[in-house]
Length: 244
Length: 244
Image (cartoon, rainbow over all chains, first blue to last red; front, side):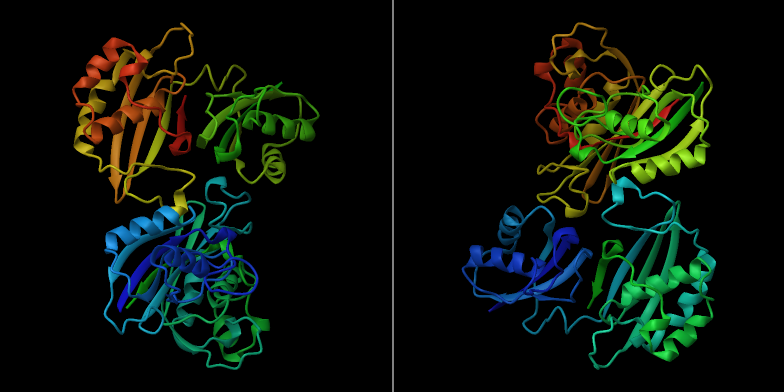
């Protein structure tokens, strides 16, 4: 059996997220359906992580096992010619037999884009969220430092009743300003459901002066979703890199 | 009467172009309609130049005269809150009484974006055209030099039967490569109908080796549309700056 690794770029706007589910079209299902049309096989395409409905990817990674002997280059061409225009395979390679996109991942990097003005830029409107209030980037950077490291991030997790381990390690948070755009990069060994978007929501509350930067220590310690900021819209979030 | 100058950004995908016309929705009409709702006046919004159906703008410039006393900042906020999400007023100012967006323009800068690979990047698919054939940028740059200057650009004009003056001055053409993307910037004192897109089509024919770089001199001299390259798709074209 070959183990094939795909690097996938997608505009998540019209999808119910990466993972197969009952309601709505999942990106995983779309790609699996096309692999079946090409190879005749019903494969399980393992993604590095789920992206939520409306979240994008510059480079999601996924792998699947196949008996097909079709050369890589031909397979990529076939996939791209049959995929809808909002999904593309940007890279394809043979992986070692034990490689698993999800379990082998060391860290994932997400970028959140905020348009910090009172209008939304029409050219990036599907890939950014708007913040009307002027953000103080210095305060946001100060707060971000408290988040880096190994913490129980329960305060930044969707309230879903699950009691799984919510300890994760944030390796780095970078905040950059370019004109009206603010980019927040978060790299972690894993993300809880809604974690990236509620961390960004909390940093935005800090940037506009509603929460003190130093209060983030208490928010983490309280482990209660009610004290952190709102979950930002999905469309501003993009998976940019998976490190193995 | 005040003379108000707007700088406008738009995603031209769903429009029939800048200028009012019988068929399809024009960007000019959309903005004029909203100005009427705000001021009660039926204004004539003069654009720096027409952009074709599907062409985008980072910074189109337009002006209109009004008796309204509404402050600039409020007017911009009102416009942006009422405009569809694919059009935004990114800058607003009072212009001198004689300022005319079209007649006062010294030059316009357009950018054409080509994805030079065998798939289209899903994240920019509405803003780039694909070229499957590997482009030789050196040859394209060499050819571009022949186009710069004052020429009769009839060979790069849509065949519309019109016999107007087709002499224009191209101030500069810059070609840049960034990964799989090729950007072609063309700055001229004016553009004939389809001129930017047929110049890019000709440069692409040269880049993929179908036409010699030096042949561009003859193509210009022959003044015949049949010898230049194809008109590239509208979606790759974007108006980036108007200089006054």
